[in-house]
Amino acid sequence: MRLSRRAIGGVMLAASLGILSVASPARANTATPFSEAAFKVAQASGSPILIEIHADWCPTCKAQQPILDKLTSDAKFKDLKVFRVDFDAQKAVVRQFGAQMQSTLIVYKGATEKGRSVGDTKQASIATLLDKSL
Image 1 (tube, helix red, strand yellow):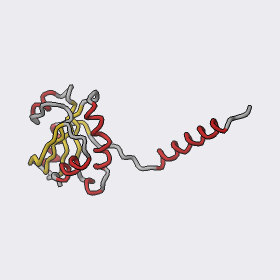
Image 2 (cartoon, helix red, strand yellow):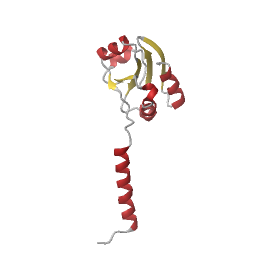
Image 3 (cartoon, helix red, strand yellow):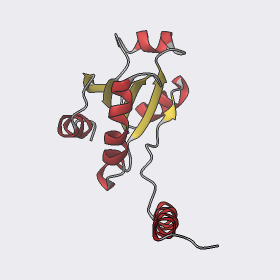
Image 4 (cartoon, one colour):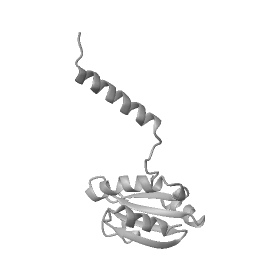
């Protein structure tokens, strides 16, 4: 059986991408599902905290995700605790935070809210927001 150059090139590209995905560090957001107990512990410790009011179906939330992944992988945010609130399943928590809609980001330094944004998909302004938690 003879393989065409195109087929060989495709196989080589796929193999290269596979190796890169294993070799490169993960940039996944370290968001944990919101729990009142974990949030209170983070607040009591004085940690920087990000609350993500998120919905899987939300296009704005999807646009925010790679930005948050990139920013939270920065060493200066190594202590940032990220909690994800499910907009659809945790309505009481959404109300507790005073959020009107999904794609709301709220930052705390300990127990003090330092800032929030709604529907923001600009890396620079999200970085500025996260900086307020430090």
